[in-house]
Amino acid sequence: KSGYQSLHMNILVPIRQNGENKKVEIELQIRTVGMDFFASVEHLLAYKKDNVADDIHERLYKCSEMVTQLDKELFDIYKVLKDK
Image 1: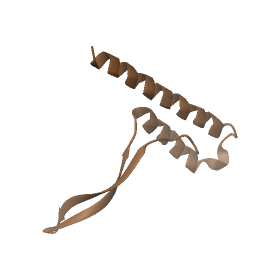
Image 2: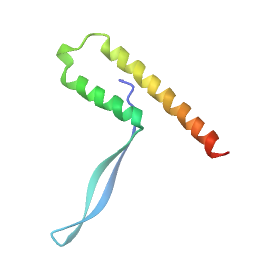
Image 3: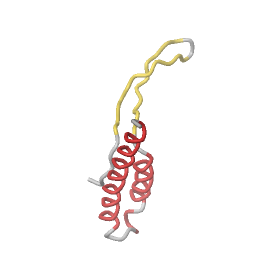
Image 4: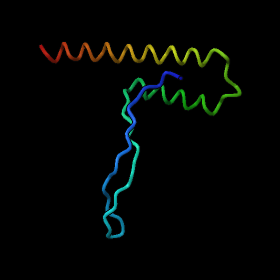
């Protein structure tokens, strides 16, 4: 809804605790630097809903689109440079 994009995975990680082997479930989030910053701004918004101008949600969504486009463009440039 907000435009946030990332890959979330729940995985079991083996640990040793008090001499016992266990598997602990963790959530792993994979996101670009741009989406990480977007998530930080979105997180602030969640705690300031009462004091936020009406257009902020729309502006934030537009930012997510720009971040996604930037990520794609940078990846394409990276591929071109890597293949040379």
